[in-house]
Length: 208
Image 1 (tube, helix red, strand yellow):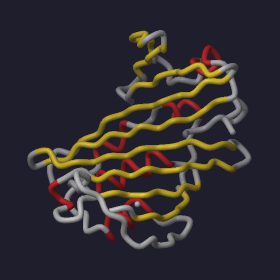
Image 2 (cartoon, one colour; image 1 turned 120 degrees about the vertical axis):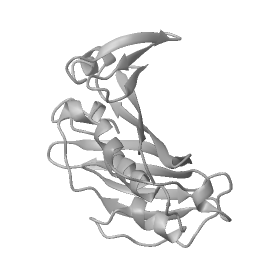
Image 3 (tube, one colour; image 1 turned 60 degrees about the vertical axis):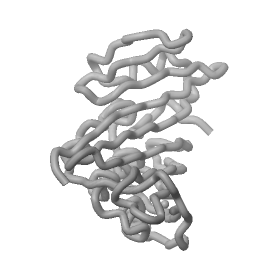
Image 4 (cartoon, helix red, strand yellow; image 1 turned 90 degrees about the horizontal axis):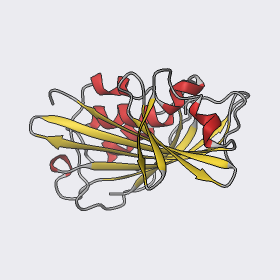
């Protein structure tokens, strides 16, 4: 199931939880609007060696990214990881599985893989997100990848990008856009008459 152009909006070793993000954004924010998470403080977590932990249910408004990071004893980059996760899933109901290193979670990256479902009067459809945060020196760095299919051709989806976005390259024929406002990049992948938008953004904290 893909997104329609009408009302397009912005778009847990392994522990799993579900949650609902309370925020709903404009169409342009779904394709961009990611850089704000970078200012939140965070730390780091572990991914080199992952293990599953017991699934824990989460209420609709619970931050499942934070909940599962806590269960896996992730402390250092937990704030950044949570901020990126909430950015990736804003306006949706989602389920996430988080992976962290078993022996030393704060010495490695923490990773979350999320299934995302939008079901509101303004937007309906599924998407997927991958969230990563890792320690770098005394700070933390993180990355978000979000994959969202749209039921419109890519040339129409281009008009939904933040104003000022520009095509910066063609990667094997796939257009890559730099999103305005330093909000990351977006690959627009044609799939028949539809368009799969892959949004990528990086975030960092300046201290633990």
